[in-house]
Image (cartoon, rainbow, N blue to C red):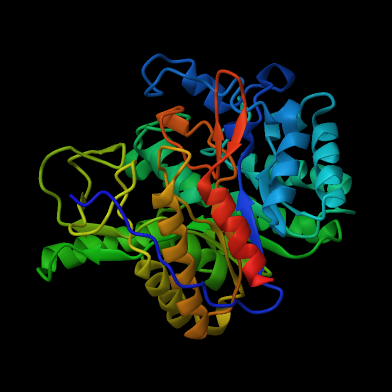
Length: 440
């Protein structure tokens, strides 16, 4: 298996004027200060021994709650135009919780960095449940509260992050919080998150704020062979992980056969889910090679795939992989974006890459530089092909708590010493800074 990459030497082509460059984080992964907020489902999940591979929790994480000024200074030194962070719903529910985000937004604005908050990034308050329809309504109430407080300074919003992963890993396979293993009985979780998105869009528009999007994860699905069983399995996987979450938002409908599996008045709900967005966020990491089921449980990318699934995920051979074992295929980002452009046509609003990044060890992280270089070039090829892409966010600013992997995976442009909380910019930080300067 190929594990390493070579760097590119030629300058990255120029992107259109006004293109938005940024970095991303999420609240639970960096904030810490767990004692100053209500518990989330991730606190409950990590309290159970064996669920996080290194036994860690996010109680302290990067201590961003207390060190946010230091982190904003890193953003300013990097030269990004925007910072995508998330709000912790459990923190907002706590006394003084919104005060923290007030301070953060003020600090970002003073530094000339555009705040781009995500309103839900998996840390659901304990006591709420995405299996229950009422959670979507509760989410809209919380969104209204946040918009009233921050809407005078925040002018770009993201409703949800990766409802596909939160459904699959948290509720179908049980490897993420809340740790359920419902398999296809988890479909109501997908529907209620999508409904929450639509209700949030309405709540934000009612609050008078604009520039609204969602951050869905997507990647090309490649059949393991041309055999009909492999092609059919790949098509099923593509519907489940890509179209199940894009079609309702962009087309106002579910892929054929899925709507009848959803709870409630689906036709009425789709009118809410399909509320027009101003842009569409895509988190991209890698393509997936899929074939017919092989009759046995397999481990892939840190996730155990049960044998009873109607597909199996296969290794993509002959490409480099990250330290997480994820395949590195930059050209698949071009394929994904041009494919979206062809599938959705004028129903696809401008696109923003809301996450793209990789896990590598070390401060002299030449492999991360090569990864980012290759993917930004692939993004430019999509722009040249006619896809209206308006921005790109690296995941992530800081090494952080990587969910069920704990602190074993490092995605940051900045190295974290978890004992001292010292931040050390990596070679990739300097590379991204210089690339942004070259972009002007």
